[in-house]
Length: 395
Image 1 (spheres, one colour):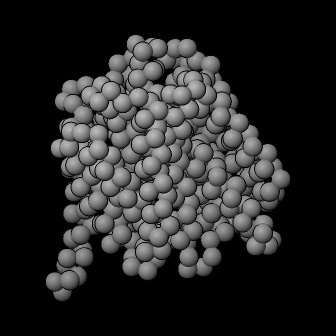
Image 2: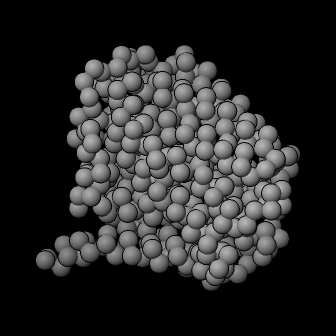
């Protein structure tokens, strides 16, 4: 359907607030259970691989239904999907809070994932709809600041609330926040009429992702998501077993990282608008590689915290560059379908991260899992750097 337009600047800001708040909330759920994995382990007796599935279960439905949801966002409008997603988010959170075994917890995570897919795709399409000409990178930079704040702030919330109040507390809190945003959205979001025609980009998202212009930014986004998923899974378990760090302490660490992440994302988006997406993405992947190397080699808590702060900067740079880069590649598609494709790429990485992290943690140790971030980031950085080096050499 046609992009959403705001009737006034005040209306535009209100819609953007709802959209960005939804993005932050849904992304927070990605890793909110991460600091609570030791508690889940003691409650259920699950091994590392099963715990990895508990984290990845949220991303699996995102991986499976992002493209159809993107089409629905273009056919039905942003409003019903965003509001329906928030409702499912609240329901899934309550299911997790009430679960006493692994299967119902996995079911609750899956319901959360379905809700996140609906609202995240619709919300990001709204941000794109309302971006001013020539400032899409900046607008998406703010959206991905919220995305990054949620991704790192979710574990902070889970660790602090779960470690100081109760296991159930963060999930009931999320359910309450989802309902508040839902109520605000019922008032603020425009009731746009759905378009009758099929989306222009129907059935073309996969060929677009395979085009040379899309492969590199897709790899950047997937690499960042994989690193994020791996860190969300490995760090709480590693710090608990090796350093004796409590869930609340892990939450504080993630909260500090979230502030760094959120501060870097908007200027990173502006830098991408002015300098180009590739140089900013290159800086991000190189920073991620440095962080992975430091995590693998520094044994103490202080060094690990510094490395995680560096990782937060790298992730902000990578996502702030890759999202508008892919948006430009998807330019011929309707917005909902385009962001369904972006969500698909992110979910693929975040699904692989905890699974790879669980396998490596059980078979080779946390240091090897951290080293994987460095290795993959260097490979992607090499792809990013090659055209820049050829251009500088005049080839």
